[in-house]
Length: 246
Image (cartoon, rainbow, N blue to C red; front, side, top):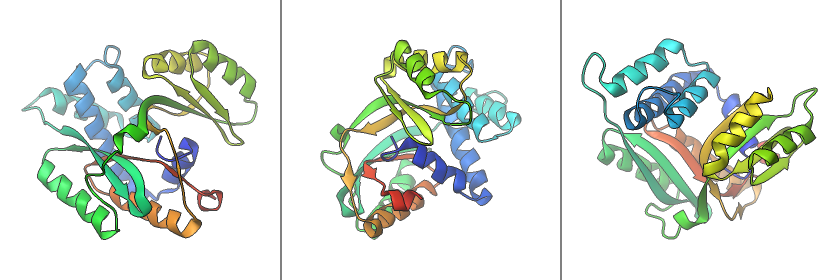
């Protein structure tokens, strides 16, 4: 997932100021467009589109924006817009491996922008032996709110096929195989649990530990990458120190 704790990542995103909301809607819109182009405009038959729409709604993206993105992807009212999905394997500063997922209509522009951010910070593009350090997994987060029974969440997720469940003080993080993700997600929703997030992510198999100063340097680079219009996700294996998360 994006860092050691998906919940920590969610909190960082929520803390972002509203000035970034326009960029967030652009990113979500592109994700909807790619999903609709690849699997069709019906979210009931296209699970990737269903997830993209759910994320957009969770970010309070207006309904008309969602519908417009689907229409643009399928060519309603004009030519369909085409975006290419690319994943760059890189090393962030201090040799932190990362996978950068982008959606772009101009790969030359995008790779130049990503390279500039990475190399200026002392990182390395074209990282060798990065991809094997990540696995595609389903990641579901349930925020621990008053009245929530963690044991009940645990049982529901486990019975539906979850691989791993981490019950923390603030959230319950559930990891599944790609194949079991939909069944676990649906089982939790049918029980009425509110999901803070649910996605297919690149989860690290090992983690990099750094001191606070170095960790903050890496996080600053991740923030700079996420501000690029074409970057959708930055998956990394930095185990963020508790004092930095706080």
